[in-house]
Length: 241
Image 1: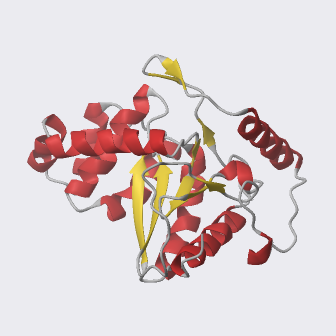
Image 2: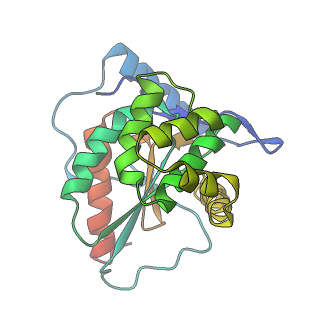
């Protein structure tokens, strides 16, 4: 059980508040109360036949989603996260174990999201690492530096020093950090996906761009979180709506 299992977006973004439904806010408050009081059931997780849309996962309402026509060979799973998010830090080792065992037909992608201004620099750090081909290597180190060593890696100078310490050449880092249209495009895509999928909590996993599992729906239980994701992956693979 993770005591702080989600980061919650209540920040003003580009002059407007991201609107939450009363239902989603109530679910977030309820799961927080259950976690803090230690009353979340520690019994066996629900069986896959018990999972229901609206209770265990949400169907993303998006006009760009096409109907499922028959079984799918490749299923995309996206994690919306940020290095600054404490819940994402605690979820990371659990997610890594899942990634090590995931089927080959599951294509996984991380999407760094921005709930407040300081998160943008850390989102850039992810894409810099990705462009340099070291994001898998540096992700655990970035989380540790921020949440254990308490380094403010949103500071550009400290971020550069971190990358150099981890073996990245200074010239390579500076060439990416100073000007990179590719990274700017990725940040724009992250913002767009966050708005389209109505991401208000982190970590959130999206399956096939049509199903969303966020921590408010799983009572703070990361094992159940991933069990729901596995169920949705197989649901899509079988061609079921």
